[in-house]
Image (cartoon, rainbow, N blue to C red; front, side, top):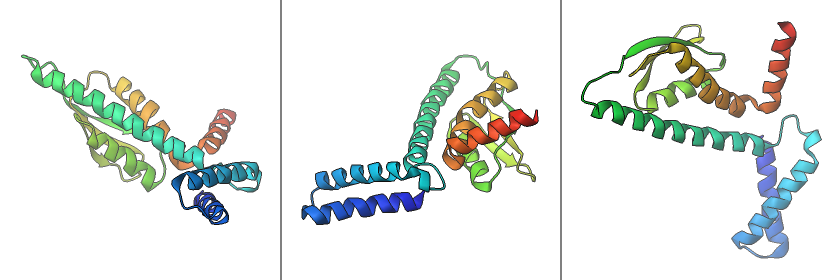
Length: 174
């Protein structure tokens, strides 16, 4: 993936050298040509096109911003209510993430959103202990985390092709 990005930049700078024009528009044209060349040669690369993972990282960032705004709004509504109706609590969230990077990322993202905090990660890295400001239904909270953060993180770290292979393998074993 990093090699593809490096080659794309080299193609863009070579395009600028060939045209003897150091403007940003010439660089963009060279960059787009580089994307086209890398896309044409995609079957020779071991992984998917690097822009796919870059797009997945951008989607993860936008997802976090959305969750941040929604959780801020929820916390503001709960604080401004005359009577506190929330039920704070701690719940265990079992994750399918495997590497240290994959486990650290949702822990940080959960801690950064208001109203939630990751307290601890189990010793086997399979369970996150999370404190939430309002724990009415643990199943809905876990499914929300699994459907948003965990899915987006796996798309960034593993790529869509690998996720599809793993899902097919899980279906075949079950």
